[in-house]
Each structure stands twice: as structure tokens, then as C-alpha cells.
Amino acid sequence: MSNDRLSRRRILKLGAGAAAVAGLAGCGPIGKSDGVLDILGQAEKLTERVQRFILSSGQLAREFSESDISPYFLANGSTDPQEPGYRAHAAEGFASWRLEIGGLVERPTSYSLDELRAMPSRTQITRHDCVEGWSCIGKWKGVKLSHLLEQTGIAANARYVVFHCADALEQTMDGSGQYYESIAMVDAFHPQTILAYEMNDETLPIPYGAPVRLRLERQLGYKMAKYIMRIELVESFAQIGRGRGGFWEDRGYEWYAGI
Amino acid sequence: MTPLRHDARSATRRHSLTVRITHWVNVLCIIFLLPSGLQIFNAHPALYLGEISDFDNPVLAISAEPAPNADGLRGFVTLGDVSFTTTGLLGASKGPSDTLQQRAFPSWSTLPGDNNLAEGRRWHFFFAWLFVLNGAIYLIHGLASRHAFRNLAPTLTDLKRIGADIRDHLRLRFHPDNGKYGPLQKLAYFGIAFLVLPVIVVSGWAMSPGMNAAFPWMVDIFGGRQSARTMHFVAAFLLVLFIVVHLAMVVLTGPLRGLRAMVTGGQTKGAANVE
Image 1: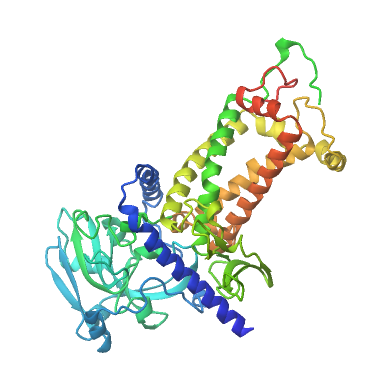
Image 2 (image 1 turned 45 degrees about the vertical axis):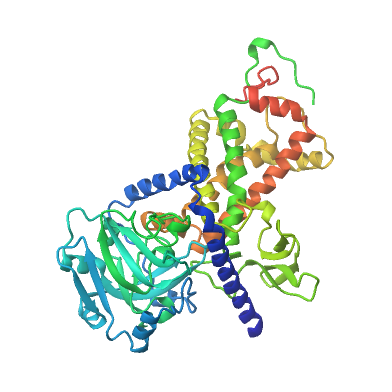
């Protein structure tokens, strides 16, 4: 029985892995600026506009109770980054890791993990929805992104918050396989948008994004960047990666992932 | 089968213009929504009940495992505790490459044909918008014109006659086309238009984290997000079942006449005013 379950779980994980790899392979040629796909992509703008409207009073994503927490939380994407810089940080428990916040801010700053932990925190038990279709519930503790941005100040022309991550999810010659994500300022200031350093009452484990990962509770999992090294405020993300605002966005996924 | 003869002046259209347009837009949408939906399903081919995914206990899972056959792969579907071998169709199938590959729904049934969740989502959400707007027009028209109540909603008399209607259908004896729907027809059309299709839409919305924050009741009525996802799939399956029966009935009862009525309105055929 338990063997059966294990194998089933392994099969599921294999399937998820295969889908991810296939996604990568299949999306290789998505740089093909296919007219049809561009037209279909217009629906995303409509979805974003409508969802922004119905969410304009800043509604919170549902928060659950301790008993709802998933006994097993699937870790997806990168789960153990091998980049030497990251390995070095991980080896010393991220003691000398610092989160840089720069770009269009008034006071570029960096914070150590201890400094982040000393700040006012928010704890939330929320459901994580993967673009693949599965959901898990986890408990996250972290510092509100709005709190950090209030510390650094934001320039008037800053429109997006970009998260540069330690992991390369795809090995490419030009570095475009590096994971990154971007979110709108309205989402950055949402009360549930936190940089989580704890998961289920423990130091955030590496498979889930240590030392800090983004929680963006009203959108899909791929928006919630893990292994964050640097935060950059920008007016446009056209010059970052392949210019679509994130690793998966560069591979054909929606930038607005509220659906 | 013989249409009743009526004075030409009293003859009205079998189907109103709104019904005809929304019907064919719906056909177009479903042609794209079903295979792109299977593509999305393939990204995680397991269904669960409740709020979250209990990965060890899916209600339905399509998977594959190594097998001592020529292709080295066995595709199977697990439904609760029961498992069926479905190699070649579900779990493991041959794509253009002609070798058996792990794949929940086969290449020929998905849009696009290769594994591409991103493109599948684009097709799905584009036509989902069209489907929803089209459905809204149909519903508003159906309620405002009372088409829904007059012609589609089964009456008490219909429900009493349902046994006889089932017997007639089993003997392939269909009631004459007098411009009115029989009990089974009413149940099928009413059920699809006012139950199955709305459930498909709302369960789809219930999977959206943005919609969840705005309208938490939407996910609650299904008993959780994963239940909503399962219902989305079940409702789509019912829709396919309906389409199969619907097409079979159109063929059995005079395909040209049925098709013409849904295109031109069929004004010379109908007796009663059935929109």
C-alpha cells in the first residue's frame, strides 16, 4: 500500500517534471512571434483589466487554519540551485547573504536575513495554486514587501518590482535561463505580498526558496519567485531577460497570472 | 416525423436569430475549448476532491509506468481504487514520433498537439472569454424572451411523460416535429444551457486565485478549489456526452432539416412559435 502510494507520488512528480521539461522544450521556439498566439494573448489583458477592477478594494486571498496545512507540499521548478554563489550562501546558512533593493528607489539598500527577521512580520496560511493545476496549503511568515519599499522609497516613475533569483531553471548561453519575476506596484503594496523566510514554522527550506521567496497570494505559483537575491524597481521590464517580465512569461505564460 | 401543415402566415421561425448565432458561436468556442482544456489537464493529469491536492489519493489519475512490453510503457487510468490499462489512448500514446510516450490525453486530442501548457492556456482563455460573453447573451435573451420557460423548462406534464418518451427513444420512435420539444429534449437542452454550461463557467472561475479573492463563495459552492477543478472536468465530460447524443439525434431525425433550421431559422417548418 505505502509502496503503491510512494510510486504514485513519484509518478506524479515525474509527470510534473516531464511537463516542465516538455514546456521548456516546447517553448523554445515561442520567440516565434506567432500572430495567432499574439491575438490569443490579448485575452490576458482583458482578464487583467477585469480582475484588477473586481479586486480594486484590495481583497485578501483566503487564509486558512493550521489544520488545513498540506501534509505534503509539492516543490516545483528549481528545488536545489547549484549555482556556486548560491551554494556558498546555503553552506553558511545565508549568514552573509544580503537582499539588495535598488533601481528606481530613493535609497538603495541591502538587508541581511537577520535584519529582515527583525522587521515587523506577517504570517499567513494560504493556498498555493500551480499553473499545472494542483494546490497545496502552507503557512508563510515574512516581511511585507510594502514595508521594505517604504524604507527605500520609490521613484515616481517606478512601475514594476523585479525579483532577480539565484537559480537558472534553464541552461542557456546568454543567461536568459535565469529565473526572475516582476509584479505591478499595486500587487507589491498588497498586505499579503510578503517576502517569506519561514514556511510552516520552520526556516524556509531550500526546495521552497531559501533564504526568501515571494508570496503573491492572488496569482499563480510561478509568480512567487524563490531564491531572491536582488529586488529592482523599474519603469519597464523590456530590457530584462527576453523582455516579457519573467522566466515563464518569456516562455509564453501570462504575465498577469490571476487565472 | 411529418411536420404539421399550417397556414404560411402563422408559421414562425423555429429558432430565433439570437439562438442561432449563439449556438454556432458556442460550437466554435467548444471546438477550441475542449482540446485546449485537455492540454491544460495534461500538465497535471490527476483530479482531487476538496481544497487541496491530496497527491496520494486522487479521485482520477491518468499515468504511465514502465512495463515489460515492446514499448516499455503501460498507460493506465486510476479511478478511486480501480485501475484500467489504457495504453495507446490514455497515459501512454504515440504522437507524431510513433513511439509510445507518457501523455495523459493523446496528441490528437489536445491543442496544441505537443506538450505546451502555455499555448493551451492561451487558446483556452481566449475562447473562454468568447464563450462567457456568448453565453451571457444567450441567457439574457432566453430569460427576457421567456424562451427558457416557454420552450425549454420541462413542465409537470413533461416529467409525467418521461417514461413513455424514454421508451419511444429506445425504439427510435421520435415524436413528430410539431415545433415543440419532447420531455427528454427539454431536459437535455435545459440541463445543458442552464446547468452544465453555467457549472463549467463558474467552476472555471473558481480555479482562478484572483476570482477566489474577489468571490470566495464561488469556490465554496464546489467545496474547494480542487473539487471545482474536478467539477470543471466532469461538466466538460457531460457536455461531450450531450454533444454525442445531440449529433446522433440530429442525424436520426433528419440532419438536413435540423441543420437548416439552426442556420436559416427554418420558418416554413415550425407550427407553434418555438423561437
